[in-house]
Image 1: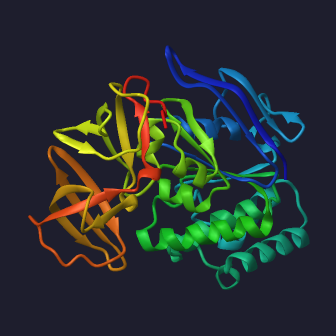
Image 2: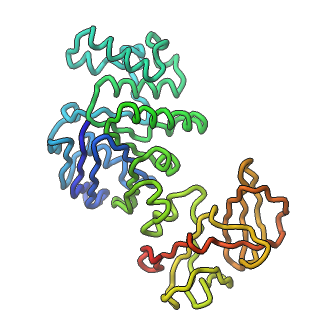
Image 3: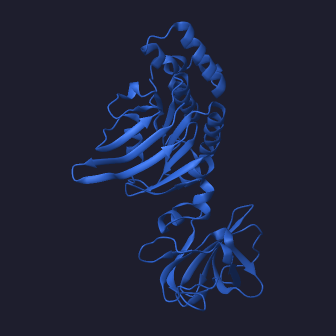
Length: 349
């Protein structure tokens, strides 16, 4: 296990800068998730950490070593890929032990490590099977087992769950997190799924356009996003974000005045943010809203409202017995409103 440090990392393909000066410090044993939309640079950053992509500028340190010039095999890392990358002609046991065999490990050592990893991952009864005889979840476990047997300083995961169905993704998400809690190996995990990031990470690094938009614990990013991009990216369903103007009466947008606490920024153009679960249905006060869509989800109900020209989404624990077209009153929780400057898109309050 080891600390990982990325300092001033840049990557250019010709005149195109895809990574633009990234600095990230990862503590020993930490589970860090790089998250962001397609094309933000997260996979490129992971590949540079693995040694599969050259660095244009900056330094990568794993433990006490600067590894910029080291080959992937010399960095003491293990990577789990999106497509599993298993050898189809080898059994599960052979796939898991191949890297040790390639390095000249003894048969006894290889067998011991493979059996230990198989026991951890529930693969003990599958060691004689071939990849074609396994389900997607079992193949992913084999790929993880191959990483475990190497006993690396750092695990790298490149969108490992994207090929699995929704139910299996949830199961495997829990298994990877449980595995990390058991082994406590420094882990860097790439995904475009912010739900994966929120549920698995000790620290999330949100990337956008080759830069770090914000990093912190899941709840830090959820409770206090520093900019409009993070506010809209973290959370499912996404935060309601409405452009308008701060006034003495409230936040004016689309012919509606949205309530907010008094502000000294009257006249300033801004974005008003409120998470769907921070809206309440009330009998008095609040703002008038027309129900546009009702989506029952069992334990919760998702409602879409129109307030003047503004649309809002709300999530409610109670059952909604009304109908589309009904007029109701909704109240944002004033202490949970977020404001972002319209020009800089940075947090105001």
